[in-house]
Image (cartoon, rainbow, N blue to C red):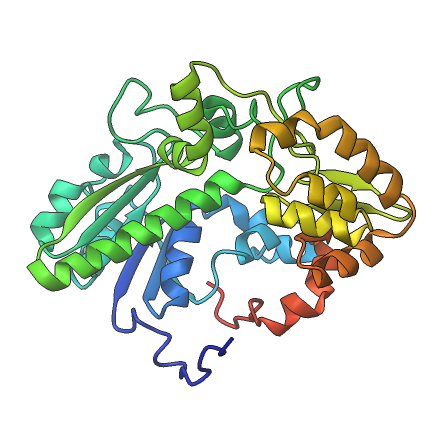
Length: 355
């Protein structure tokens, strides 16, 4: 297969060069949205309260960085931004903010509903200043509905949306997803919405208001479960590490470490069976339906449990991958960061511009 061309200059990869973003966000979801824009070349000016700066400046596992106001939780989504401290409770602070907004293409905020309006910086006031502005508001529940003014963080939306109940096993209590997936998911949705609005503005010349809710993003991130629940009238039980009907799409202990198998299709299942020298079973399932495969789940699970215990997870990962079977050893983050694949992709970049 031909490889993708590697002739993109840094300038070509900065589509938002010349776009100014006034960023009134804090904590995680909002800053992650504006960080995406900054990475794409936008001039992001992070506005923080003079009296209450972003609380994430003091959060993280490095006490030294937290003391400097650069906690690791803050650094992860605030690179490539400029910073300005304003007192929005004072007329002079609001006046400075309004002058910045007049020069901006985008304004992003993630305060509770009504806060920016009280400062004279709601969409109606801002669009009167700058009709071309893209105004994006991120909240827990959105600007409409009975919970519009309720506060929220990632963990609250995980609980509210059903995500926690969908995580874990049928025998466990609901389990919170460790990483702040809804914060980052909401940030990605917001960045996409802003990008789309900028593209539309290039055609119409008009700005617009974008209402992004973490609860809405949660529904989108669980689309398959939402559709299933609506279709059958009940929520599927949480699967944990074991697929309810596909033994080859589950996790197993090995001689050293856990291995996650991802043989979801019939062809992948056949490849897996041949890779463990069970050509007979591969032939048996050649024309099997998904229901028939599911009916043999326990049989296949026992087979895999026994054979995978004979080698290490690293050995099985290499063996199955060579055979065209999706599989990976369950790694810690530090192990994943050291893997040659992650390092070769240059996804990890250093930024010297931290507000």
